[in-house]
Length: 289
Image (cartoon, rainbow, N blue to C red; front, top):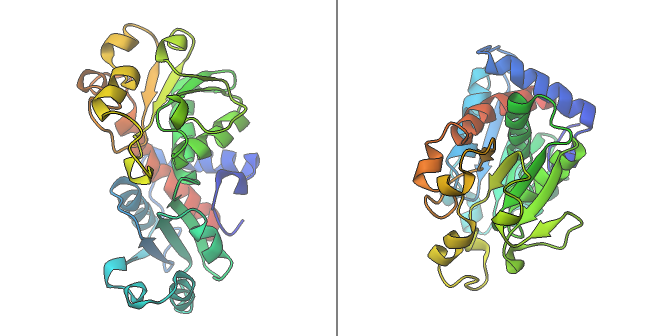
């Protein structure tokens, strides 16, 4: 494979190899596998974790990283995204890491470049490396995840993270239930419910999602406080249950997850961030080493 646009681009065997490499890198191994490779980051949407994680991953493998400041790029002068990518591609980079607010942009760019395109999140469509790091985090905790039950909670309809995880975790045998108010649920074949109390005694893991207010065409909840009263993951809700908690970030404190639960060792949010570097090292290795 030359590109990673969505999780289904990688076969199960390819993903297993990526997970093995990530485990190797997570033990502290930094190898100069990408020495003399050039990687360009094109983030047309704000990012802290994903952008920094990719840049650290690339540098740990010895690559040179060039960041395109989109606010100062020729796209501000009316140049199309395809032309921008084609011009950058003519300079000979080995990979471009792309984030954009509109679904489908990385796929379109992949059709016009020789460089590998890695999707760092496109609209509400996909975020493949986030799903890979979530699977890696779950496997590190459970070992084999087949048959384990996970509830994905929140603004699922507008979440690229949910889309990628539903494909990947289902493929690896996890049993998924979607928990959200009706207007946050997509059309799906997965079991759904509108209340956390329906699933809390029957899951091994919870993946909380941020409310994607920037993708709402109109206000869909009376207030975030109202939403939190129904869907915030609290220490009181989890109690003493043996459940781990994931979140792709950024976390809306006391909306998605309460302060007490964020401090709880069952919360894997920072472990996910740490694992993100190892997974992205493994993805870069698999595509351009």
